[in-house]
Length: 74
Length: 234
Image 1 (tube, one colour):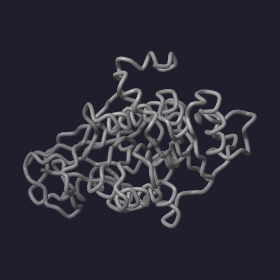
Image 2 (image 1 turned 180 degrees about the vertical axis):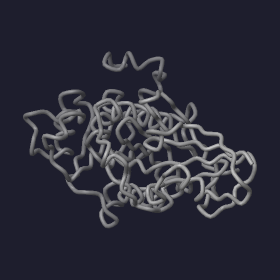
Image 3 (image 1 turned 45 degrees about the horizontal axis):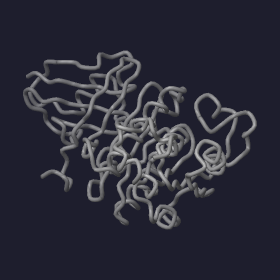
């Protein structure tokens, strides 16, 4: 199935900011994060189709996963 | 109307500009974001500004913090905000609070403000500030920066946007590694001030239930709609 991944801020460094990837059924958000070499501890916000997502959620065809690091400076 | 405000018109109507002197805006944090925010609020003619910061200026602030200069190293940031505004626009009353905002003192510091601006430098304090604004029913304009990146959201009572977006986790922000250059606080501060003004005059569209993500390395600006289980989705 096809998944769109949108990365933000530092997660774009060394990676494409939008990626359309083919994955097996039963792939979870966590699997995608691992595949991209992102440390789960660095993820501040995980959205699936614009809604609050979970790491263990099994994704569906055409899901859009948005992944954000924490930005807190002032 | 005063000549000093003549170029605010017709961006703001004469009536809108006149009203600004009656409002109070509390700016929590007078560093990179807060310095620019206070400057812009005062020049627009916001009558009352509460500047809040427990820190003093140090040399590493000089690359980006408008209120810092070589003669103000060691001076409290909230006090410096008041001193500068006295020369920029003496019509503005600035109340300086030289404490860090906390759960204990937060309510008494921001009480009476029409809008609160989040110009803090860590996520833990931002979540505390959102909680206090929620409790005493005051709109909050959030801004945060890290390197080439920034974000802005406007949080109205009931929204709890920051709690939602940060997942209630006080993570260490990416700015710890990326630093903060001169241009990121300026753009995020400007967008925050535009949000404050719109909340006050009730005109235009605000970033409510949304987070604007700014990526100046790629000049990419994206607004994410927050569609969580929060109250503002009607």
